[in-house]
Image: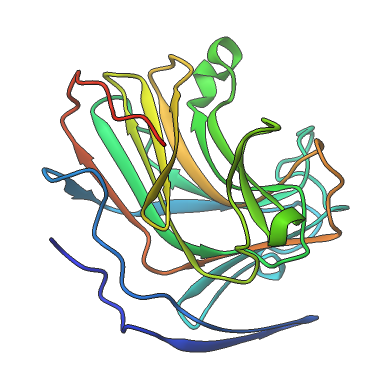
Amino acid sequence: MNQLKMPLTTFFKLTLPGLFVCALLPLAAPAQMDGTGWTPLAVRFDVQSPTNAPQNARYFFTNNIYHCLAYSNDCSFLPGNTTLSRTEMRFTPDFTHGEVQYQALMMAPAGENSYTIWQEHTGNAQSPRHGPVAIMLNWLAKDGGSIWNGFDENGELAKNLGGKWFQLNVEHNLATRTIRVWINQKLVATKRDNRATDYYFKTGVYQQRHYPASYRMETYITNSIQMWTRPATNQPAAKSS
């Protein structure tokens, strides 16, 4: 099994206006979850950022770390768009069949609140029919920094992660319509998709209305993002514990 090509620990510092981050990156992670047969996909993305600021004031790539930043009073990412502020990496191309898996090493600061750090979005043409999102992972300041499955009051997937690097894996089997989520190699969620046939992944910061948002919202992702695909099987995925 391939391993991420990064040292066991990597010390880094980021110094940006109003921000100082100093942390150790985690141990190298397994190449993928859920068995073998995966074929690597090229990792490509576009960046969506607020219209009221230059992109280089909201999106940074420093010391091999992607840093997505948004403020609660930022504009949307397109003129006339009615969604809240975001700085997100939108992965391309969309996928329409088989199984696809995403993996990244991520961090969000403790104390920042009410934004999406990762989502699987329905293809834009299918969003009006099926809804815009197949799954949404939200960051809240409560419980020491926690990740939630959408806005489900019982949907806390992990806690005490504020300021700590964690490994995220998400797998979507379009044959079984099943999405599974692992955090630090632990299966934490299994859910059905929304029955669309076109999807894409996004990560970064996307402000949410469900809880009061902090003024500053940010997500860090190491430059070790990986994606894979394999032919989908019709066998149901194992349920999360």
